[in-house]
Length: 530
Image (cartoon, rainbow, N blue to C red; front, side, top):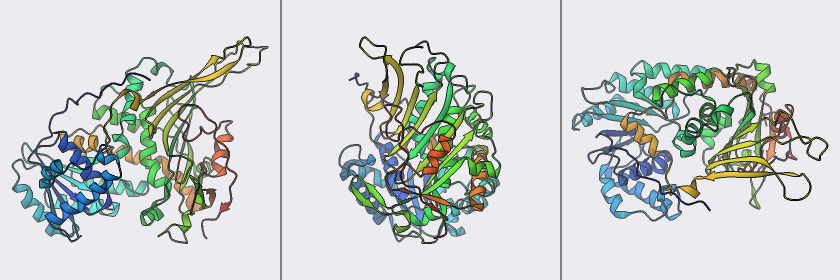
């Protein structure tokens, strides 16, 4: 077991005083992630003692009931040992101090009266700075931004800032993403907009940059001369749970690919930025997504597969199919699994396919990047039982077992020349004492300090949707779905897609080695019009 290294305190300064206004404050996101993250930042001394947090929504709360509602929820999560707990019960003393920051305004944030009230509230603050957070349904993002602009609330007084945080999904196709960007940019500057993607708050995602650019070992081989292909997987074991109303309108593609999976692709594929700063890094990410080959509709259909989970078993327990889940409409063509092949047409990656897949009710919870290197160009083991060497793999696991694993070939002990795959790895938990966090702490802190490095720019968002649009167009013409049993890793078509190229999927949940995924037994095709 390697020696553990205690994580040093961040060389981080306390964020400047501001007022944080949260639209949609009675929603699940706020109590599950945002407030626990702010609570953690407060305990770490990273937010100003004068900072105030104001929730705005139509739910019937006042300051006292809002605070009690949040405390009860978080305390339950602590008892269940969720990420917000940091491994113990809720610290009542810390919460008693923190909750004095929390305030609530009941009202309709689509009406102008709320914004007049906000203006008065900001005027009472000593700095005049404000951070506005859209924790609402995506249909409200543009309207909230326009209301803020028309009320003059995005105009920055001298020495103060005004910023807007927008959650995903940022649009539902290219046209809607462009329209939303236009709305936002008509009333504020790009440097005031923080399009948040919680995947980028994960330590292992940020470590991709460090691994590539701080170690001479990797970068010389990070190109099409040595890499055969790259697989990016985001697998979930849960079903739709209580998100049926949202998921029926969204599906796996819109929920995961233009944001989470493309962000992972961009981190892996970017060119070295000129410097480690927000402008340089975001420019390189936008270039990569802009270089994704725009498939014709018929090519998009050929290079993708979509499916929907059916009744099956997980951990020995029977689970229902998607159409049997509570709140799911009987007539829909929503996919719960999607896979696609994309090509990045630039000098570094020409000819290297990127295979992306994401789905619910798969065999294991696993978000990973699997990089398959080309086999040795010449085998010197002719006339032995080893005529062809296997490929090396580098596995970067984002969650749950965060770390990196590399496998290579070694001689098996004995008189005969026999090889075996050995694995060398780094797990975060073995080297660092990492506190349990929600993943939002870093991102919220960056919003408060004005660091946009981990946030998406308008052109990056639009380039992502531009790459996805051919697939959406292809499926609108042919909404057929393949079924896969809960507990399987997608439908048969996903395995046929990669198999046509002579490749196999890396086994979900086997980060410590290049396991080969079994082809599912099921594969019933649906027309999407049950």
